[in-house]
Length: 455
Ligand code: GLN
Image (cartoon, helix red, strand yellow):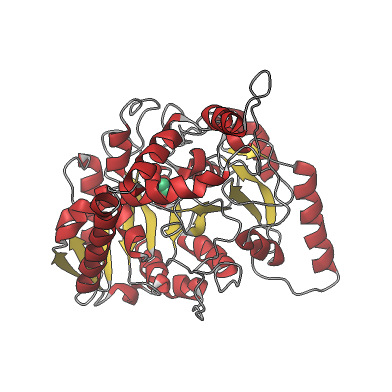
């Protein structure tokens, strides 16, 4: 049914970069056969899974939305994918994304934009717009994404889906094509809090292949989501509202839905607490130094020798000219912009002033969170200040994309978990609005419990 749905709608949506119907059906039949002989399989066995193209798999290409990796195939599966397969999930295809996960609209993909199923003239958010659109359009019930500055949560919000950025280190990054290694986190996207939790349980846990992977015994997120169906869950929950996250430029219809969500929370017995987090106003600035710095280093490996594309100048050329022509042809404008920003921020003489100060700001933001979580259990904000915008509306003005991330970036800088869940549509455009909840590191289950109570 999902393959039929993809055949029906994906020419218009462009959520998928690769599918292999035969292989998906073969994997599904294999699950049926194992079930028929009485093998006990997990709750998600046989359920189709869409995979953001940032994750490598052996059965399909992995491009990370870039021309430079066109046709690249990995010799191994990313750990999150391997765990999903071991749980019996059936890969249904690779989803579109902004090139190397840089962006907030999926318009930076080298393979054309993904459109928002709610309104085809609008973006689905990004960078994981393909995964969110696939889930929202019923092309897949579950999807994997990566969240470096909001790329699971923001597209979930803009497509009326649920998206979770787990605690940093909670899900292995092995086999995730790196953007900014200290911020990247793999996580689930689905249409309900419980579905998201079920996928989270499958992919989480220690992995020796990722040096930042946490060796921690995670409680069941699905159990937490199921507990949340008891209305008493919200009684006494202390919910922080950060002054600095109620930023200028929040769309009126988003603000209305957010305030209604807060009213619902208090009606159920939650307590609202205003939080002052003075350093949050510098989060976007710090992020857009740290991310380009780490990205410029991570992307140095696309050198025309080891992966993907190679452009050989006519008449041969030197190693340097092949490298530079390949990178000139293979990377898009946003990737080049960030490589230039990053190498500048890391260069001798500027390192302390830019990269060093950004890291100090990052520590101050972590302290703001620590102080806040002494007073509250979760922090609430709109996931994104706006609903989905028209295709092309931000083109030529990357700052508008960057500012759209102001609400999601702080969680990445602090390594804490965040969830986005749908809270209705904005009155001015009828497009979905997301509520973001954040919790202290390791408290992912708290988000599922509260999230499913609100849902
Ligand atoms: N929009 C953010 C950026 O462009 C988020 C990216 C992400 O989470 N991968 O960096």
